[in-house]
Image (cartoon, rainbow, N blue to C red; front, top):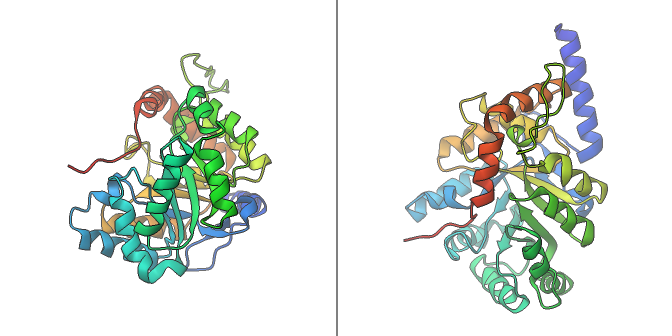
Length: 327
């Protein structure tokens, strides 16, 4: 491919992303995008404060890492009550005590009852040392029975709507890495501002193509093809997770290709675990150098990675419980 054609394709892909997400970048700075209809700009890379954050055994090291991330422009922080039964939120809160205005703060609640969710939310506000949380996601939507519990009259969803009305939180969201079809239903039915879903190149089911690939009926549908279009149509802000497939994809292709695949989708940002300072530096550098992948490159990447990894990733994510216990 000639250099001029490559630049044309890159500029065309970038123009499409700018139109879809409001992608904006200045030399040397972290690019930002608009989080759906919220109108809020967030960095294209956010810091996950789950098991990778809690793997910093010394609290001082964890706090230093998060401060380093914020300094690098990674100002979207994603935590949850279930990460260490409040330990992650407590650590994040120590940063928020002095840097709250710099950060878009998201947490998650796993309780499905309205009363239980409100108790956790009140504790989250204390632990996070803030009077308002930007986003609260209903944590880890599973199947249809789980959705029914979430949307019951006395369930967590109605409780979060009330919390939004009372300005305890700004935006109501839901996260899912298990079942694209049930997330699609949830997004279609309800007034979510934001959502977080598993989006990586290996999770897209193989489709018929020039090489004669066919859809494998044992494979699940993908969030990219089933749930993401609903979110885009309803202008629900999307953050991507499981970018590296729980590290199962690392080493198969360059890490920047995995990140750039997800960021080439119409999402606001990607949430990454960063258990070492060098990961923070590397990921922020990749984000600042982001160039969208052309559609044909995305297709080639997804077909290659799906053929080797999708079924195993589907099984893993179906059984993976997104919590972290501290002994």
